[in-house]
Image (cartoon, rainbow, N blue to C red; front, side):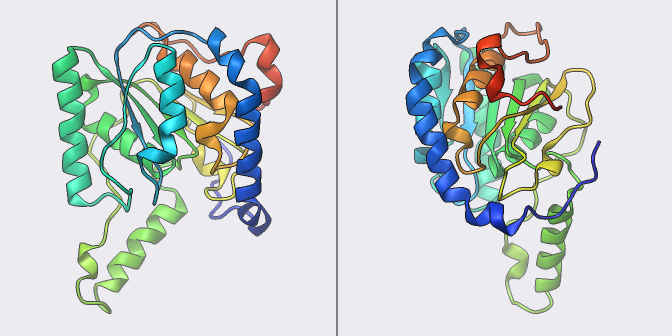
Length: 254
């Protein structure tokens, strides 16, 4: 495992918006290819957005997955402003409702902060979760920025009345016991890529793509990978292998 770094470069941060535009353009060009991606089996898929975004930001991703036969739901909680008590309680209830009504385990897809939510839902209710895929998410639980965020809130309680009510990192007890895929890009200008890699072990993998953080939900390589991971039969997990014709979209480094 590489050392986890705190922040990406300023150049990557400043160029995130135009590079995300390139990801959208690449998706428009590659859209017909997605028709050949692996089909879904109709089990429920819950998609969780990143910080300060909501369901509109994942609409293209969810539309593509529905077209491939996946039973996809957005989170339906408006703008993601952090793991407030309402968010945590509603997501727990939503996961259990999808599991109960479908009588099938739920796949979780989380973009950035949404990926942290997906991880904690899987820790809390592994019997309800089929697997998860995170996009540009700092999956290393002790990532420096996460510790720093806690410290800021703790220090704020001495300086700002009511600071204790600010959203805190959401951490469930227990290990991650479901198949998990972390998708990352070394050109991420929001979250340093080194914090987006699991320690490789059984049913856990890291897949690198080319692109930006803001464009991950529009990246054709990401959509192909999601179709492949979500389309696997339950209990038949195998590591991701890109098709030969799309190998350029997936750097060989792991």
